[in-house]
Amino acid sequence: MGDSQTWAAAPAAAERARSVLAAAWSCAVTAEGGREEFIGAHEVTGDGRVLLRLPEDSALWAAAICAPRGEPSAVLEFADVAPVPVRRRIRARLWLAGWFTAEDDHLVFRPTRVVLRRPSGAAVVGLDDFAAAAPDPLAGAEAHLLTHLADAHPDAVERLTRLVDPGSLHGAVRVRPLAVDRHGLTLRIERARTHGDVRLPFHTPADDVGQLTERMHHLLAQASAAGCPRALQRQRADRDR
Image 1 (cartoon, rainbow, N blue to C red):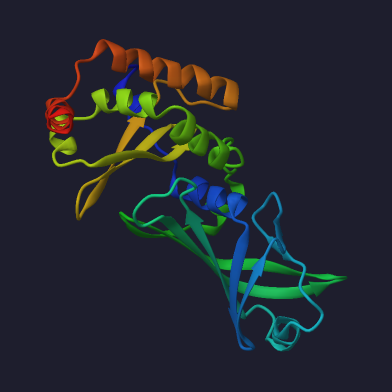
Image 2: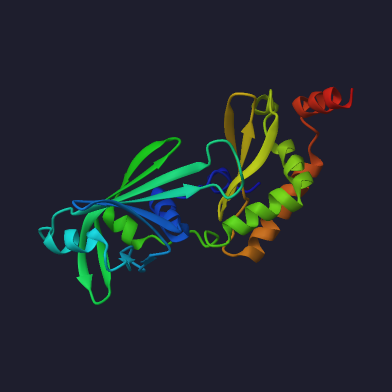
């Protein structure tokens, strides 16, 4: 499995925030002019600034121009939605408070406060950490990777449950791939009325899709060597009756 520190690795808050920002297709902006939602209108620079190209009639232009420079003039919200259908698909939300400046045909948003909210709670991300962090190298491919795993390889997903503590599978009615990053794969275990998430860390991080394939094969090899959890055995027996 590798050493315990590597095995327990997970994205830091700044990296997770930049990954949410990099993968998001839509953005909600709240400013003095009200709240507007935009699809495919933003880009992200290497240091985390957000560039917005808006319709000419957007009230956000006036709000950005009239706001006092250096004062928070808007809040941008990004939702991280699981690509595979699961219960409660919002995996995280990212809020950026800051101010806009108008440049040519677009607005430049400079954050003064960054907040990432995950199921485990909300965290304020330091601005220097946010600017210096890079998104997860798999963030752009994650949606395709997870939907392919769920749709084309459900048997592999079921085999991976052999690496999950049997107690976590008690009452499970469905297991789906929820997230993947360079550090590991997360499974969503759904029960009749509740759900829980289990993380399967990789033995070493994956920096591209090729390395991810090797890490997944490593997990599946471990799963093949493990016994089938009793909880799933009982469920299969019940279905076969």
